[in-house]
Length: 228
Image 1 (spheres, rainbow, N blue to C red):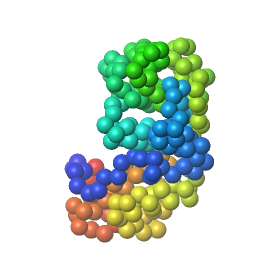
Image 2: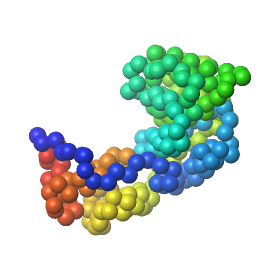
Image 3: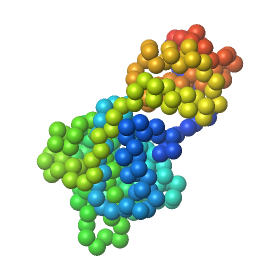
Image 4: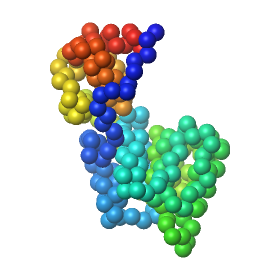
């Protein structure tokens, strides 16, 4: 099987600007206000919703924004096998897929919470977390679960088919791709509803088209998938 190289083409990373809110305008506005410096406080924010609702996109958008300002972030998700000790230089603590945290990760996440709320600290980082369940249903230790739910909580809704179509079209335009209606319909009807998956597939196809010097068509997509 041939592995497709993904080191060419245009990269369009997660940002608040390229997040399509749909019914999630309140959550987006909350994050925009925080990053503009108008609502910064130690009160945590928790986002929850189904896979594909944009949780990880928003966390990564916040991380990128903070890094571009020259500040540091603490990040933990289910792939973080050995979480780092709390760093007082962190501007924000980002916890993704919290419903999957191991006992070790839960212990460290709670430690981060405690340190972030230390009175008199030079910096009190904001905690932004995300999971697939509402706070009260998270299978976590009680002290962590209650801390995740005591601040701002937003339930993210999935986009409908037309909204997903709009997101894919805008992303294709950002990549400089000219994608036809037939190919777009094929993507939306044959693959996961998870926008992250669809966007990743679109970016792979863009790279493959550049490598093979072929136009964007359904046969090209099939040929690419055969080589993965």
